[in-house]
Length: 332
Image (tube, rainbow, N blue to C red; front, side, top):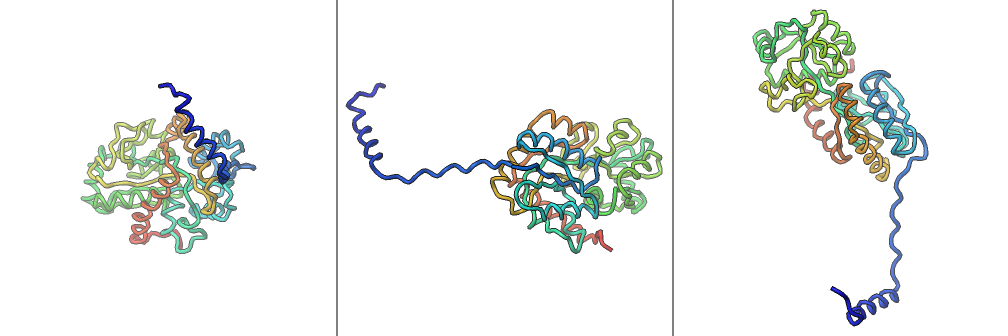
């Protein structure tokens, strides 16, 4: 419908009147946060491991979007407390990020009487990026053909079935503890110094079973030297589609989080948190990055900062009391 000159006059008059009235200057849009120096990504584990590989993979793509190099700094030791403490005490300027996982951000609250950092107060989440699938693995010639066989044997002979873990207090150890509780079984837990020695014993047939992560045991699993009886994930792992979950094995509430996400010091300004979260989400939407993570043996994850903080709070509410109830500690 056309507008006649007659119809335009009231609008024109109103516009002129508005111009004659003093108006407050519009608020300037807040500038987008832009790092002016390289980003330091602290990893609380040694070079060459799964956590280190993920940081370098994701960090290389983050640097493209942020316009600054992302430099991985490995700070292993003391149950991931050395790296977490260094990140917690870094300047809250958005230029230091940390691979916060279910160990450093959750389990350590109960595993240590005195932590040099506070996982709740010292950090805020940027976003999740990975979940490490765990499996109950047995030697290729094991007498246990199914997870049902395994559970039945453990019930018939409490403590008679050995199960290795990469160490006391590891996420794998916590996964076994919840497995025992929900399946009403008692296993003979054998902590190793890392995952490799336990996998070697599986290969030799001298260890009944072990809770392993796909990232570190992928080769023997793919080659058939060890067999997976069940996974800890809520759905079947995409590269082990024939292996049931523990939920399918009759433990409908079972969940053993081995997540990893990006966190920053709690006082980091909101613009930096928002920008880092946006760039991480962009990276995690890249099919090439996601495919490479699956090849490594981890499940790609995404979340907003708020969703990540909520996940950490929910998991702490379950796991911290459970670890304390079980009396598990990493201190003498």
